[in-house]
Image (cartoon, rainbow, N blue to C red; front, side, top):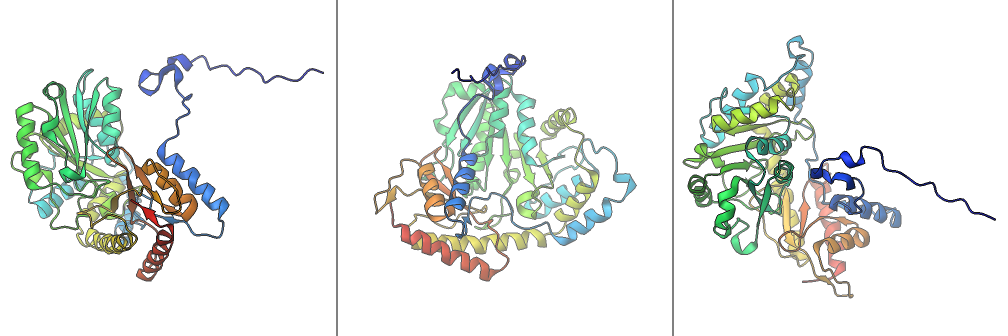
Length: 418
């Protein structure tokens, strides 16, 4: 008796046509599993094994609240205005002017809204487009790790290379710019920084920014500063890279409406700085999108003019962070209050007293999810670290306290070793 054989699955004719930058003829055939997909799978396993146990989710990397009601009311009004129906292209002046007022009010930075500011559909596209302004094959983008990889990904798309700058505790989580070889500096076009830093939560000092400006002029590269978490600064006054003397001569700063204004999903931000760089970004953007919906831009402008909104959001996340730091320290974790962001970055445990061992942070994350129902994000780029986010859902301070109590109970029972 013959057995049926599986029919041969042939590649589509265009399989060999995929660009090398996304894998070429092997696109779609990789068995490597993305970190966040592994976390999703571990969460599903944990829920299946313990359906009655609440997942304590510290892995969410986005705000847990809706945008302020006043901002939503502006959106509701503007969405019905016929003058807002068309393409926005490189943005409406109302948003650029609000961004200029914001920069002046918070950082005493003077910007011409017409030439030194351009909106972006969230900050992510800005990091995708800025390499297009500068990177040719063989050029280098200097990137801190761990960090947000988009500018590096697009650098490679254009045939460039990425030089990784590890963020280490012994350097206060600042990149060691003196360690970059001269041949790399000769090829470097971009340096991408991010402070308050995600995920380490550390701040850059004025002295560090001054060094960056001097080095950019000496080595002739452009600085791109990611300021997405700038309004979630807990230690002192928020600092813009553009406050640094000479910074306007060497680069741009990218701001996001997401973190500081609870506008996750609205996709609004702006690029500000040297007019020639902003112009180059605008030219690339003009050939990439047709601008964010004008009503969204006007609602975002109203948000930028209301400093009470980010003040409330910062207070909430600072309160939650203080509670989380206290709990983790009580459970034996080596951590301290970060300078900013809603992320807490702490060395991963090495195992448990019962005999579990974790070679990497990823192993610890999987144990935390599957055995304890506690979700974190692993980083193994520059040492083994876990990232806890305080963007969990909790409707009241009492709910926060209850979640902290349960977190402490579960982590304490695990008896981690370090």
